[in-house]
Amino acid sequence: MIRNIPFLIIYIFLSLTLTAQDMNVKPGTKVTIASGAQLNFINSSSLILEDSPSTAPSFLQHGLVNFSSGQAHIEQYLTKDTWNIVSSPVSDGIIEAYEWMYLIYYSESDNSWHYLNKPVNQPLNAGQGYFVWPYVVDPNGTYPASPDSAVIKGNLNYQDINLALANTDASPKSGWNLIGNPFPVALNWNGDASWNLNNVGAAMYIKDPVSGNYVVWNYNTGGSKADSGYIAATQGFWVRTADTTGTAASITLPESQRSHKSAAFYKSSGPFLPKQLLVEVEQEGKSDKTIMGFIEDATVGYDGNYDATYLYGDEDAMSLFSMIGGERYALNHLPSIEEYPVIPVGFIPKKSGNFTLTSEWMESFPVDIPIFLEDKKDNIYQDLRINPEYSFAAELNEETYRFNIHFTNPLGVDNVGSLSGVHIYAYQKTIFVVLPEDLQGEIYVYNMLGEIIAQRETSVGKVNIPVNADNTYLFVKVTSENGLKSGKVFIK
Image (cartoon, rainbow, N blue to C red; front, side, top):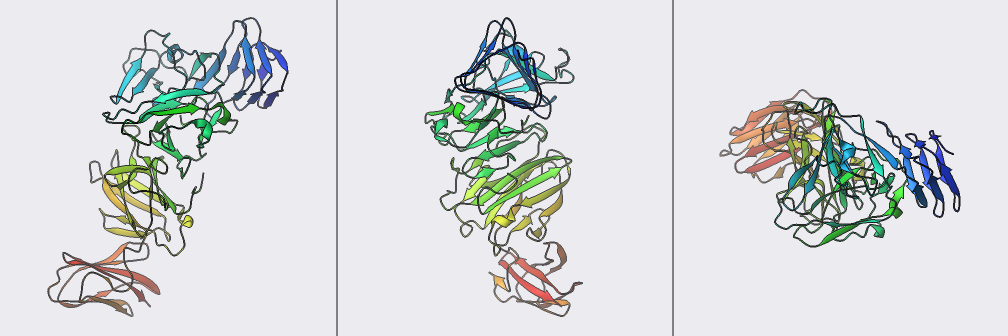
């Protein structure tokens, strides 16, 4: 008889029948029941999968698990005072598992949320995702404090689960479906044929309860989820139909894609493809990320094969996204840099303060492609290849369209632009800008980090701008209502 399983790997072999009593599987333990094997629990004994804040057990069942009168008990350790997305790992679970917590489900047809409380024997549907809010102190002052974990009881899911997805053309959120991993083991979101994806986009979204935002993984293009496409045991997640105009959609949650792979319960450190840029904004330990890139077969609008539209997180979570054609994206792939050399980026802070913007994966682009950040509010350009980190201040309710990412040099090369009659050059430590008589505007001088080091109003004739620099290039930009002229000069 088996009683306690510590941190190890257990494999119950083909044709082996094992009798157990009160089998406790500790966090981090991996158990496999091979096809043809049986694990029989006698009397009222139970299988207990214990969870913890950092890791969970992994139970991969191919054979049979039989109970005389007991049940499987699966713990879900939950982060308190925030919404966790969960799914039931048993076929006959009930909402009583989340007693003294707030439990809701989503209706795509009218973009509405519904609370589940009484009666407590209402079923938890296998494959459906739920939002659950455990609390330290009940926000309404009615109920006792939530336990640290939910315990779901029943018979383990271990075979395919088929789901029809909602896709209501008239819904404000047409095609968004909240589903979940119905197994007590990780599930690989990889686009394998066993998923039987019918009109389902290639991206899935998992909520991070620490930041309050969503991490995203597209099995064709990658994403911001650090452990790639693995979905933790009992983790709920979002998918969106590829066609949001009402076309029928369905999905299989496949037993064949279960894996003992460790997956973070959000409760690749590098780009998945060439020519992808990850941009992250951070404040006080919380962050949001957006990814943009270029694929020859991509389209300008939402493409379910390559993109992921932006999904807002908690009410107090900041938002960062790219913007093309009126749509906001967490993953945005465009046909070519030549057609789209500038990608607008929106930012929504939820409190005023100082923020840090960091860019990664520049090495996935050819070295001759410039990558610049433009801060439209502060009129600052920064070469991200030289300095990938940018600090800025933001206020509540300011303009959302804050940044541009340039895949060309926005400060120009020697004397290019639409203004005729303007000439830019340097001698020793002075920049000279020759201007026509009728030009009214501004002259800006930037260093290699994109910081403004000098600014002048235009005037008739030659403008002299002394600079304090040695052996470096500076960028000069002349702006007016009639156009722009920019140049690069070398200061000895």
